[in-house]
Amino acid sequence: MMTKIQSLFYRLKGKEFINASFFSAIASVVKILTTLIIGKFIALKLGTEGLALFGQLYSFVLIILVFGGGAMSQGIVKYIAEYLTTKDQRQLKSMISTSFQLSVISSGIIGLLLIILPKTISFWIFDSPDYYYIFYVFGISLILYVLNNFFIAIVNGHIQYKKTNQLNIISNLLTLAISLLLIYFYGISGALLSVVIAPVFSFFVVIFILRNEPWVSKSFFWQKIEPKQVKLLTHFIILGIVSSALFPWSSILIRNIIIDKVSLSAAGIYELVTRISGASLMFFTLTVTTYFIPKISGLKNIKEVTSEIKSVYKIMVPFVVVILIGIFVFKIFLIKLLADDRFLDAQYLFKYQLVGDFFKVCAQIFSFALVARAKVWWVIIIDVSSIVIQIVLTYILVGMYGIEGAAMAYMFMFILYFTIFAILFLRKKIF
Image (cartoon, rainbow, N blue to C red; front, side, top):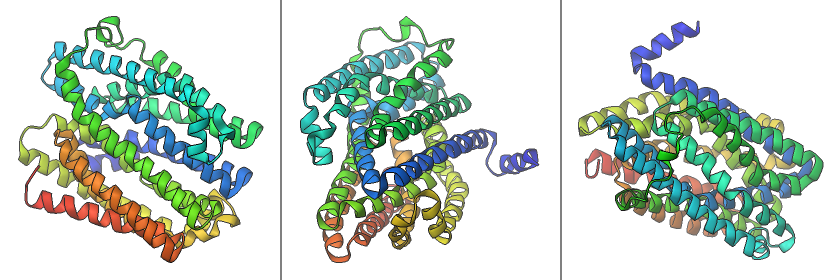
């Protein structure tokens, strides 16, 4: 039966995309289950307020990872795929070595700042200095956290779909096991600690699995930092700071707006909705980042790029629509399954959140295509404008409609986000 299904998809799109999608689907299921099980455990044991605090720290960690070296990830994937296509071994070594050393330097500096300013950061994130010890631990573990993601990005750049997803699955299963243990024994402190130490264990497992790869050698990591490669990565660093850091930063601000104007409990309800919606889109995100970016990076002809974008749309968008409709129909069941009756007010947010998710998926296919073609400044400008608009809308609409206003702002922002990309694509201005 599985063979017949795969054969059908091969005729629709081709073996390469289906292989990437198939392995991404497995990784997505594991990631979704990990996210939802951890969320359920926190919701039951720590309630709406505990989930809100967990969400605040998780968003902060995403921001720090960007400044600690994660901003280069998409650039690493793009240029490794490109150098492999052109069989330029010297540039390949130079890119890996330069990005590795930049990751070590930046994560070391950021880690030191976390260790020096733990109480200040704790007060800013949690409105309390009581959790300062979390940032001591994070400062120490950051370099391994960053390198774990760095090595997975290299594998992705080598277009090894199966291995990339294998590493993601292992990382997620380790995160799940460590998180549940820490939450069970240490409550909210354990939940927060799990965010900053689980990837450390993943790093050692990833290194063990990759130990026999031909690029895991000294010659690939300790060459002189190459200014040319730094220049190429700079555009992606700026994009990473904007897209991967500002979106989590805006999430922190949005939760703070909800906390100030409604309550901490309301922020926890909003966090559950965003976690469910985020989990529903993980298959799309993993497939696109694993397949689409390295694939587009190797294409030079604009007609081939356009054809690839249309093909991904034909397969991914209907699939996402079915998922989003399913979530809306079974929203009350999902709330009770993934949390409890304290979160039932979340049902009123889904109609806005899921519409926003649909337009988010449609827009991100265009966005990832521009990133893969190194047209990052357009993405930066659009992302920054969209984030500012969402924050302003959230402030206004939460004041008018309470917690539903935050979901409305999300919906309006991504409708606008998609509209801008669609106009640019249809007019062939930048693609």
